[in-house]
Length: 163
Figure 1 (cartoon, rainbow, N blue to C red):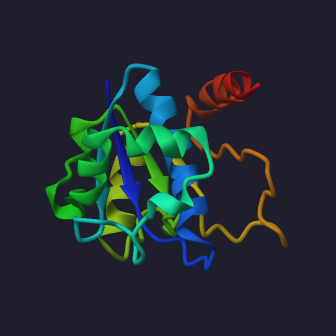
Figure 2: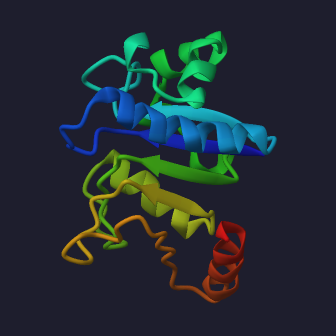
Figure 3: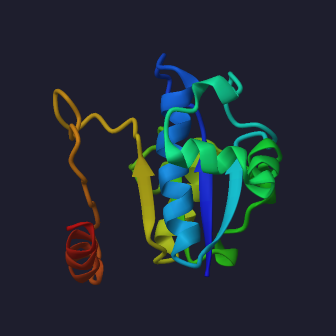
């Protein structure tokens, strides 16, 4: 099973180590479950403005990444969005992306890919997101959003899997 990770900056000013730790937790969770993870970003190449530094490693997942040459190469050489085709993936994870949830009103390549994946019935995760839903977002919670005939059952399975 192939899972697409679309990486972008979420505009936060936190240190690169914290951003990297969150990404790596999701990345290795998928890989450890047997998924092939493919990384993409808006323009391709390294996705974030500042590089991850070895000194920022404060977790076991960060240390694992430093020992994983293939993962480091994948992160340094992400595909551009123009090289990505939704039909090639079973699911997608938008990490740090701020996308439009106004389906049918995709304004850029990131929004268009997001809409295309959802229209194809693919499960899509979005964290941290630019959703303006509550005064403080969802805090440390997990928000599952869907609006289709199969969304209720899928949302229930996602909730049970999160427990």
